[in-house]
Amino acid sequence: MKRTIFSEDHDAFRESVRQFIAKEIVPNLPDWEEQGCIPRDFYKKTAEIGINGLQIPEEFGGGGIDSFLFNTVVYEEIGYAAASLGGFQVHLNTVLPYFLEYCNDEQRRRWFPGFADGGLVSSIAMTEPGIGSDLAGVATTAVRDGDDYILNGAKTFITGGINADLVIVLARTDKDVENRRDGLSLLVVERDMPGFSHGRNLHKIGMKSSDTAELSFVDVRVPARNLLGEEGRAFGMLGHNLSQERLSIAITALATATAAVNLAVEYAQERLVFGKPLAGFQNTKFVLAECATELAAGQALVDQALVALDAGELAPADAAKAKLFCTEVQARVIDKCLQVHGGYGYMTEYPIARLYADARVTRIFGGTSEVMKSVISKSIGL
Image (cartoon, rainbow, N blue to C red; front, side, top):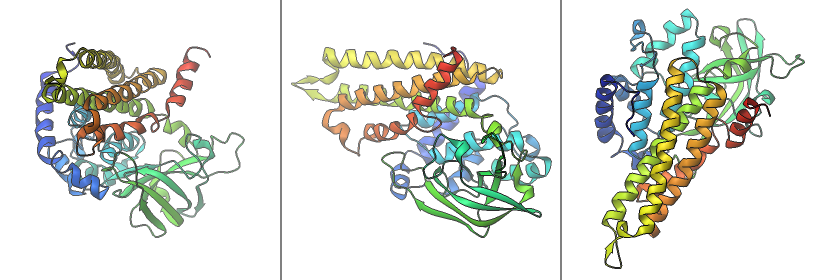
Protein backbone atom coordinates (compact mmCIF):
# COMPACT_ATOMS: atom_id res chain seq x y z
CA MET A 1 0.00 0.00 0.00
CA LYS A 2 1.20 3.49 -0.80
CA ARG A 3 2.08 5.50 2.28
CA THR A 4 0.83 9.09 2.33
CA ILE A 5 2.35 10.54 5.50
CA PHE A 6 5.71 11.57 4.04
CA SER A 7 6.58 14.61 1.91
CA GLU A 8 9.33 15.17 -0.66
CA ASP A 9 11.48 16.61 2.12
CA HIS A 10 11.13 13.35 4.05
CA ASP A 11 12.00 11.37 0.92
CA ALA A 12 15.15 13.41 0.32
CA PHE A 13 16.17 13.03 3.95
CA ARG A 14 15.53 9.28 3.73
CA GLU A 15 17.88 8.97 0.78
CA SER A 16 20.71 10.73 2.62
CA VAL A 17 20.12 8.62 5.74
CA ARG A 18 20.08 5.44 3.66
CA GLN A 19 23.41 6.32 2.06
CA PHE A 20 24.88 7.14 5.46
CA ILE A 21 23.74 3.81 6.90
CA ALA A 22 25.18 1.88 3.94
CA LYS A 23 28.53 3.61 4.43
CA GLU A 24 28.85 4.00 8.20
CA ILE A 25 26.71 1.31 9.83
CA VAL A 26 26.36 -1.81 7.67
CA PRO A 27 30.11 -2.52 7.17
CA ASN A 28 30.94 -1.72 10.81
CA LEU A 29 28.09 -3.49 12.58
CA PRO A 30 29.90 -6.84 13.05
CA ASP A 31 32.79 -5.08 14.80
CA TRP A 32 30.42 -3.06 16.99
CA GLU A 33 28.59 -6.23 17.99
CA GLU A 34 31.88 -7.85 18.95
CA GLN A 35 32.87 -4.78 20.98
CA GLY A 36 29.42 -4.59 22.58
CA CYS A 37 29.17 -0.87 21.90
CA ILE A 38 29.07 1.64 19.09
CA PRO A 39 31.99 4.11 19.07
CA ARG A 40 31.55 7.58 20.48
CA ASP A 41 32.56 9.27 17.22
CA PHE A 42 29.46 7.76 15.59
CA TYR A 43 27.36 10.38 17.38
CA LYS A 44 29.48 13.11 15.80
CA LYS A 45 28.96 11.60 12.36
CA THR A 46 25.18 11.39 12.74
CA ALA A 47 25.18 14.99 13.96
CA GLU A 48 26.90 16.09 10.77
CA ILE A 49 23.93 14.99 8.66
CA GLY A 50 21.42 16.54 11.06
CA ILE A 51 20.05 13.46 12.81
CA ASN A 52 20.93 14.35 16.40
CA GLY A 53 19.43 17.81 16.53
CA LEU A 54 16.15 17.32 14.69
CA GLN A 55 14.04 18.58 17.61
CA ILE A 56 16.69 20.81 19.22
CA PRO A 57 15.79 24.53 18.85
CA GLU A 58 17.71 26.32 16.11
CA GLU A 59 19.32 28.72 18.59
CA PHE A 60 21.27 25.76 20.02
CA GLY A 61 22.34 24.37 16.65
CA GLY A 62 19.39 22.07 16.00
CA GLY A 63 16.72 21.79 13.35
CA GLY A 64 13.81 23.03 15.43
CA ILE A 65 11.46 20.44 13.91
CA ASP A 66 8.27 19.57 15.79
CA SER A 67 7.24 16.58 13.67
CA PHE A 68 8.37 13.07 14.58
CA LEU A 69 8.29 11.92 10.96
CA PHE A 70 11.95 12.73 10.31
CA ASN A 71 12.90 10.59 13.33
CA THR A 72 10.70 7.86 11.90
CA VAL A 73 12.69 7.91 8.68
CA VAL A 74 15.91 7.34 10.62
CA TYR A 75 14.56 4.43 12.68
CA GLU A 76 12.96 2.80 9.67
CA GLU A 77 16.13 2.96 7.61
CA ILE A 78 18.21 1.48 10.42
CA GLY A 79 15.69 -1.36 10.65
CA TYR A 80 15.53 -1.89 6.90
CA ALA A 81 19.31 -2.37 7.00
CA ALA A 82 18.77 -5.25 9.47
CA ALA A 83 20.55 -3.27 12.17
CA SER A 84 19.72 -2.25 15.72
CA LEU A 85 21.39 0.62 17.56
CA GLY A 86 19.61 0.60 20.90
CA GLY A 87 21.83 3.07 22.74
CA PHE A 88 21.72 5.58 19.92
CA GLN A 89 17.94 5.39 19.64
CA VAL A 90 17.42 5.63 23.39
CA HIS A 91 19.66 8.73 23.45
CA LEU A 92 17.62 10.54 20.80
CA ASN A 93 14.12 9.18 21.16
CA THR A 94 13.75 8.23 24.82
CA VAL A 95 16.01 10.63 26.70
CA LEU A 96 16.10 13.80 24.60
CA PRO A 97 12.32 14.37 24.88
CA TYR A 98 12.69 14.66 28.67
CA PHE A 99 15.31 17.36 28.23
CA LEU A 100 13.17 19.15 25.64
CA GLU A 101 10.14 19.12 27.90
CA TYR A 102 11.58 19.73 31.36
CA CYS A 103 14.92 21.60 31.07
CA ASN A 104 14.93 25.15 32.39
CA ASP A 105 16.64 27.93 30.44
CA GLU A 106 20.01 27.44 32.14
CA GLN A 107 19.97 23.69 31.50
CA ARG A 108 19.01 24.21 27.89
CA ARG A 109 21.99 26.50 27.35
CA ARG A 110 24.26 24.02 29.11
CA TRP A 111 23.21 20.79 27.42
CA PHE A 112 21.37 21.39 24.15
CA PRO A 113 24.41 22.35 22.03
CA GLY A 114 26.06 19.06 23.01
CA PHE A 115 22.99 17.11 21.94
CA ALA A 116 22.93 18.88 18.59
CA ASP A 117 26.61 18.46 17.71
CA GLY A 118 27.04 14.92 19.05
CA GLY A 119 29.33 15.97 21.89
CA LEU A 120 26.97 14.64 24.58
CA VAL A 121 25.56 11.14 24.86
CA SER A 122 22.70 10.45 27.26
CA SER A 123 20.83 7.60 28.88
CA ILE A 124 18.06 7.12 31.43
CA ALA A 125 18.30 4.91 34.52
CA MET A 126 15.04 3.67 35.97
CA THR A 127 15.26 -0.12 36.32
CA GLU A 128 16.86 -1.53 39.45
CA PRO A 129 17.88 -5.05 40.46
CA GLY A 130 14.65 -6.73 41.48
CA ILE A 131 12.48 -3.84 40.32
CA GLY A 132 11.34 -3.72 36.71
CA SER A 133 7.95 -2.35 35.71
CA ASP A 134 7.11 -1.28 39.29
CA LEU A 135 8.89 2.08 39.13
CA ALA A 136 7.14 3.32 42.26
CA GLY A 137 9.19 0.78 44.21
CA VAL A 138 12.63 2.22 43.39
CA ALA A 139 15.15 2.00 46.22
CA THR A 140 17.64 4.59 44.93
CA THR A 141 17.53 7.67 47.18
CA ALA A 142 18.54 11.30 46.81
CA VAL A 143 18.71 13.31 50.04
CA ARG A 144 18.93 17.10 49.89
CA ASP A 145 22.08 18.52 51.46
CA GLY A 146 22.39 22.26 50.92
CA ASP A 147 22.81 22.94 47.22
CA ASP A 148 23.25 19.25 46.41
CA TYR A 149 21.45 15.93 46.50
CA ILE A 150 23.32 12.93 47.93
CA LEU A 151 22.50 10.06 45.61
CA ASN A 152 22.81 6.39 46.58
CA GLY A 153 21.61 3.29 44.78
CA ALA A 154 22.10 0.98 41.82
CA LYS A 155 20.52 0.59 38.41
CA THR A 156 20.65 -2.23 35.88
CA PHE A 157 19.74 -2.97 32.24
CA ILE A 158 20.58 0.64 31.36
CA THR A 159 20.70 0.94 27.58
CA GLY A 160 23.47 3.28 26.49
CA GLY A 161 24.84 3.46 30.01
CA ILE A 162 28.46 2.78 29.07
CA ASN A 163 28.68 5.62 26.54
CA ALA A 164 26.56 8.10 28.47
CA ASP A 165 27.89 11.48 29.59
CA LEU A 166 24.52 12.41 31.13
CA VAL A 167 22.23 9.92 32.86
CA ILE A 168 18.73 10.81 34.01
CA VAL A 169 18.33 8.90 37.27
CA LEU A 170 15.01 8.14 38.90
CA ALA A 171 15.41 8.44 42.67
CA ARG A 172 13.26 8.85 45.75
CA THR A 173 13.68 12.31 47.26
CA ASP A 174 10.87 11.99 49.80
CA LYS A 175 10.03 8.83 51.75
CA ASP A 176 7.27 10.37 53.86
CA VAL A 177 4.46 10.08 51.34
CA GLU A 178 1.14 8.22 51.48
CA ASN A 179 1.15 7.38 47.79
CA ARG A 180 4.43 5.71 46.86
CA ARG A 181 4.18 7.22 43.38
CA ASP A 182 4.83 10.58 45.00
CA GLY A 183 8.24 11.74 46.19
CA LEU A 184 10.17 10.58 43.11
CA SER A 185 12.48 12.93 41.21
CA LEU A 186 14.71 12.96 38.12
CA LEU A 187 18.35 13.94 38.58
CA VAL A 188 20.87 14.37 35.76
CA VAL A 189 24.10 12.68 36.78
CA GLU A 190 27.26 13.58 34.87
CA ARG A 191 29.94 11.06 33.95
CA ASP A 192 32.77 12.52 36.04
CA MET A 193 30.86 12.96 39.32
CA PRO A 194 32.71 11.25 42.21
CA GLY A 195 30.92 8.14 43.44
CA PHE A 196 29.25 7.45 40.08
CA SER A 197 30.59 4.32 38.43
CA HIS A 198 29.77 2.41 35.27
CA GLY A 199 29.72 -1.32 35.93
CA ARG A 200 30.11 -4.11 33.44
CA ASN A 201 28.65 -4.03 29.97
CA LEU A 202 26.02 -6.78 30.24
CA HIS A 203 26.12 -9.64 27.74
CA LYS A 204 22.83 -10.17 25.91
CA ILE A 205 21.48 -12.71 23.44
CA GLY A 206 20.69 -9.91 20.98
CA MET A 207 21.20 -6.21 20.28
CA LYS A 208 24.88 -6.78 20.89
CA SER A 209 26.01 -3.46 19.43
CA SER A 210 24.00 -1.69 22.12
CA ASP A 211 25.81 -1.16 25.42
CA THR A 212 23.70 -2.18 28.41
CA ALA A 213 25.15 -1.23 31.77
CA GLU A 214 24.98 -1.64 35.48
CA LEU A 215 25.34 1.74 37.20
CA SER A 216 26.26 2.45 40.80
CA PHE A 217 25.86 5.61 42.89
CA VAL A 218 27.67 5.92 46.20
CA ASP A 219 27.25 9.27 47.96
CA VAL A 220 27.21 11.07 44.62
CA ARG A 221 26.83 14.82 45.08
CA VAL A 222 24.45 15.95 42.36
CA PRO A 223 23.99 19.74 42.22
CA ALA A 224 20.39 20.85 42.73
CA ARG A 225 20.68 22.67 39.40
CA ASN A 226 20.73 19.20 37.80
CA LEU A 227 17.19 18.48 39.01
CA LEU A 228 15.06 17.89 35.92
CA GLY A 229 11.59 19.34 36.27
CA GLU A 230 9.88 19.57 39.63
CA GLU A 231 11.02 17.69 42.71
CA GLY A 232 8.72 14.85 43.73
CA ARG A 233 6.79 14.80 40.45
CA ALA A 234 8.86 12.31 38.45
CA PHE A 235 6.22 9.57 38.24
CA GLY A 236 3.90 11.82 36.26
CA MET A 237 6.80 13.13 34.19
CA LEU A 238 7.79 9.61 33.14
CA GLY A 239 4.49 9.25 31.32
CA HIS A 240 5.21 12.31 29.18
CA ASN A 241 7.16 10.42 26.51
CA LEU A 242 5.80 6.90 26.91
CA SER A 243 3.49 7.04 23.91
CA GLN A 244 6.26 8.25 21.58
CA GLU A 245 8.72 5.75 23.03
CA ARG A 246 6.33 2.85 22.54
CA LEU A 247 5.46 3.95 19.04
CA SER A 248 9.15 4.16 18.15
CA ILE A 249 9.58 0.55 19.29
CA ALA A 250 6.68 -0.41 17.03
CA ILE A 251 8.31 1.45 14.13
CA THR A 252 11.62 -0.34 14.60
CA ALA A 253 9.90 -3.71 15.07
CA LEU A 254 8.05 -3.30 11.80
CA ALA A 255 11.14 -2.12 9.94
CA THR A 256 13.27 -5.06 11.06
CA ALA A 257 10.45 -7.47 10.19
CA THR A 258 10.36 -5.88 6.73
CA ALA A 259 14.10 -6.48 6.43
CA ALA A 260 13.52 -10.12 7.39
CA VAL A 261 10.95 -10.60 4.61
CA ASN A 262 13.28 -8.99 2.07
CA LEU A 263 16.09 -11.29 3.15
CA ALA A 264 13.82 -14.35 2.99
CA VAL A 265 12.54 -13.46 -0.49
CA GLU A 266 16.10 -12.99 -1.75
CA TYR A 267 17.25 -16.25 -0.19
CA ALA A 268 14.24 -18.18 -1.50
CA GLN A 269 14.89 -16.97 -5.03
CA GLU A 270 18.52 -18.10 -4.93
CA ARG A 271 18.32 -21.33 -2.91
CA LEU A 272 17.81 -24.48 -4.95
CA VAL A 273 15.87 -27.37 -3.40
CA PHE A 274 15.27 -30.56 -5.37
CA GLY A 275 16.52 -28.79 -8.46
CA LYS A 276 14.30 -25.72 -8.33
CA PRO A 277 14.27 -22.40 -6.45
CA LEU A 278 12.81 -22.50 -2.96
CA ALA A 279 10.59 -19.61 -4.03
CA GLY A 280 8.85 -21.94 -6.48
CA PHE A 281 7.26 -24.02 -3.73
CA GLN A 282 3.72 -23.13 -2.73
CA ASN A 283 4.50 -23.29 0.98
CA THR A 284 7.27 -20.68 0.63
CA LYS A 285 4.94 -18.39 -1.32
CA PHE A 286 2.13 -18.77 1.20
CA VAL A 287 4.36 -18.21 4.24
CA LEU A 288 5.87 -15.02 2.82
CA ALA A 289 2.44 -13.85 1.64
CA GLU A 290 1.22 -14.15 5.24
CA CYS A 291 4.22 -12.15 6.42
CA ALA A 292 3.66 -9.42 3.85
CA THR A 293 0.02 -9.12 4.88
CA GLU A 294 0.88 -8.78 8.56
CA LEU A 295 3.43 -6.10 7.72
CA ALA A 296 0.82 -4.15 5.76
CA ALA A 297 -1.59 -4.27 8.69
CA GLY A 298 1.11 -3.13 11.10
CA GLN A 299 2.16 -0.32 8.77
CA ALA A 300 -1.38 1.01 8.60
CA LEU A 301 -1.56 1.02 12.40
CA VAL A 302 1.81 2.74 12.79
CA ASP A 303 1.11 5.41 10.18
CA GLN A 304 -2.22 6.26 11.78
CA ALA A 305 -0.47 6.52 15.16
CA LEU A 306 2.23 8.78 13.67
CA VAL A 307 -0.39 11.17 12.38
CA ALA A 308 -2.00 11.25 15.82
CA LEU A 309 1.38 11.79 17.51
CA ASP A 310 2.23 14.80 15.35
CA ALA A 311 -1.22 16.21 16.09
CA GLY A 312 -0.68 15.75 19.83
CA GLU A 313 -3.54 13.27 19.96
CA LEU A 314 -1.88 9.85 20.40
CA ALA A 315 -3.61 8.21 23.35
CA PRO A 316 -1.53 5.93 25.60
CA ALA A 317 -3.79 2.99 24.81
CA ASP A 318 -3.34 3.50 21.06
CA ALA A 319 0.45 3.64 21.45
CA ALA A 320 0.21 0.44 23.49
CA LYS A 321 -1.82 -1.20 20.71
CA ALA A 322 0.83 -0.24 18.15
CA LYS A 323 3.66 -1.62 20.29
CA LEU A 324 1.81 -4.79 21.22
CA PHE A 325 0.71 -5.61 17.68
CA CYS A 326 3.92 -4.69 15.87
CA THR A 327 6.27 -6.46 18.25
CA GLU A 328 4.15 -9.60 18.12
CA VAL A 329 4.10 -9.35 14.32
CA GLN A 330 7.87 -8.89 14.38
CA ALA A 331 8.29 -12.09 16.36
CA ARG A 332 6.05 -14.14 14.09
CA VAL A 333 7.41 -12.77 10.83
CA ILE A 334 11.10 -13.06 11.67
CA ASP A 335 10.59 -16.59 13.00
CA LYS A 336 8.92 -17.61 9.73
CA CYS A 337 11.64 -15.92 7.68
CA LEU A 338 14.34 -17.74 9.62
CA GLN A 339 12.51 -21.00 8.90
CA VAL A 340 12.62 -20.18 5.19
CA HIS A 341 16.40 -20.00 5.51
CA GLY A 342 16.51 -23.48 7.00
CA GLY A 343 19.75 -24.39 8.77
CA TYR A 344 21.51 -21.35 7.41
CA GLY A 345 19.07 -19.14 9.29
CA TYR A 346 20.58 -20.40 12.55
CA MET A 347 24.07 -19.32 11.54
CA THR A 348 25.14 -15.96 12.95
CA GLU A 349 26.86 -15.01 9.69
CA TYR A 350 23.39 -14.57 8.18
CA PRO A 351 21.58 -11.30 9.08
CA ILE A 352 18.34 -13.16 9.72
CA ALA A 353 19.95 -14.79 12.78
CA ARG A 354 20.81 -11.36 14.21
CA LEU A 355 17.27 -10.11 13.56
CA TYR A 356 15.87 -13.16 15.36
CA ALA A 357 17.97 -12.55 18.46
CA ASP A 358 17.40 -8.79 18.43
CA ALA A 359 13.62 -9.11 18.15
CA ARG A 360 13.01 -10.90 21.43
CA VAL A 361 13.57 -7.93 23.71
CA THR A 362 11.05 -5.64 21.98
CA ARG A 363 8.23 -7.43 23.82
CA ILE A 364 9.98 -6.60 27.10
CA PHE A 365 11.47 -3.09 27.07
CA GLY A 366 9.36 0.03 26.91
CA GLY A 367 6.73 -1.94 28.81
CA THR A 368 6.16 -5.67 28.42
CA SER A 369 3.41 -7.07 26.22
CA GLU A 370 1.53 -7.87 29.42
CA VAL A 371 1.73 -4.23 30.51
CA MET A 372 0.50 -3.16 27.07
CA LYS A 373 -2.50 -5.45 27.43
CA SER A 374 -3.23 -3.95 30.86
CA VAL A 375 -3.15 -0.42 29.42
CA ILE A 376 -5.43 -1.42 26.55
CA SER A 377 -7.88 -3.30 28.76
CA LYS A 378 -8.28 -0.26 31.02
CA SER A 379 -9.12 1.85 27.97
CA ILE A 380 -12.07 -0.40 27.19
CA GLY A 381 -13.38 -0.30 30.73
CA LEU A 382 -11.93 -3.51 32.12
